[in-house]
Length: 321
Image (tube, rainbow, N blue to C red):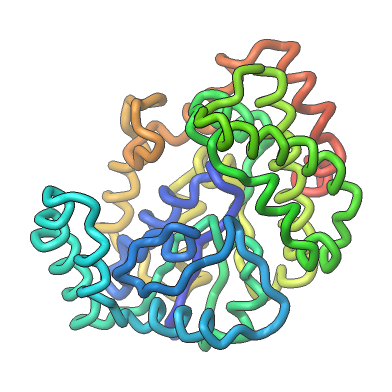
């Protein structure tokens, strides 16, 4: 019997949107996009996620209600409309958003939640959501760092500050050795906000910050994999991207979903595009094999060496085992 609820999460920029879309090609699943972002759409409810990449190790009644609403397709249409920031967005919600979610609610298919922002909530969800299957993704640090360098929008996200402000996360996963570096880069993030800027000027700082974020997430990924390797699915983005049909067939089998000819053809369409770059942050039609290692052409040799030096320990934990 397929799991009633599936979550696709992972290191941000590690293919979660693409992998989630490929799994949601199964007609029995209803795809939900990032309901655990701290600035999530109000159609999921008005519960305020307090920080990026939330972590909790004890029950929270308000969060539990929010979780149950999301997984059961209970939507708050009036709240979504009332939070429209312009007349154009109001009309768009009436024409597209409301009908889309109303259809999900009526059909009440099994839920597939795609959301990198619940990366640290996996164990919490395991305790509070029935019949759940977690899927975690990770990516080589060179590809992750290149993606951060390429898309300056990630500079404006206070990722290091959000991690630093969650002492339970750092303590429970024994990550105290990251605290000083998180503090240093948190200051950069807060100074950007204070000055009304949206990017860090110094490329070296951007590279080192991305390496730190990659290392922190890789360490947690490794710990979770050691604990849940027989219960959850752990993916390396490059392995899926370079051999998508075989890898997605394995994923579908593990999820007890039918890997039909129709789905094979759709996956092939999404993974053999000529595109290796796009103006969009998320572009699901791609040449997945070339894109997985596109960083090899774009990073300098000195940048590659620096990334490997700064992420060596965590990289070995994930990729060399």
